[in-house]
Length: 388
Ligand code: FES
Ligand SMILES: [Fe+2]
Image (tube, rainbow, N blue to C red; front, side, top):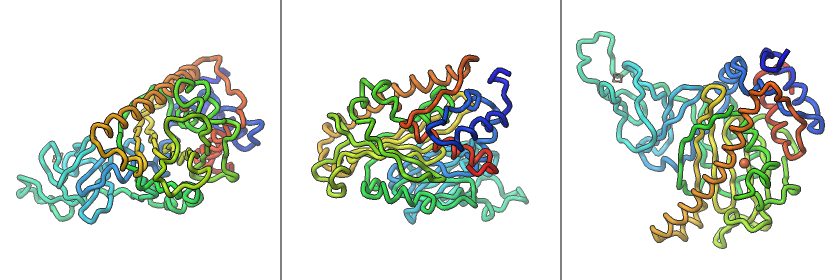
């Protein structure tokens, strides 16, 4: 049977074989794992409706009434900062006739539906609705936007549809011990963009998790900044995340602590941590900046990407001149957009390759250790009885 005809159960059996064995004998997943519709359906219910996803940084909505829109498993949501300064998340669907309430990002004192102007306060309660006085089933006080579970962790917003999910602070506690020294909650956001790439979301996640491609696919940008053989992975496997650390030993333009940085000592001053919080939140946390990707699958062959950049506060503080600040940020953003374009080329290329009848999973390198971690995660979620 050609691999393109394999049923989901066979694909998962193949994944389990690689995930449950040692990394030394692990292989990539069967190509059809990236485009089988039944696998995508299982991911929707067992991953995207169960785990935490990240709409962005809390500092992207710093003031009362600031909001950003996002979605979980196709559910439109928005995160908004209320009068108490807390970030709350609500369904972005009007309780009248289902119009989407907010779009993009912005600031507002109340949420007004663009269809018939039903108006909600910053806690999702309906404040007013015109011409409803003759409607006997209408009771304004009973109408509120459904609230979505939200947790702020080290400056990140996490949301989930699952009331039973373990709290982010418990799930990511071992990661907190690694990243807390950077105080990333103080980083200053300078960019947030949305893109759509033609690839499966898992291919982009896997691409982020391996440095093997850096000297080749990124030779024009960050490729020479790392000594690959010094990549460090965690000793343990964790349910909800994995990471690697790189010491930037080359001559990096970005990635070293500013002289005014007093949080980071010794080798940490030029070390970057690259966490992947399963399933779709990944970031490069460097002493002077961070950039992140947060993914949302759009069918099997497309992925929506939120790409954001933030800079360390001591870097931000040195950019007091507005023109100088704009120029500095501009060149940083252009640089990382260049890195992204390099990744786009490879992850779209892999997806196209995965549709070939000659495509087959090859063996993984030790540098692809996190892909093996990801395989274990996928097995736990998609085939929980296997105990991987
Ligand atoms: S759909 Fe929102 S006010 Fe009618
Ligand atoms: Fe890359």
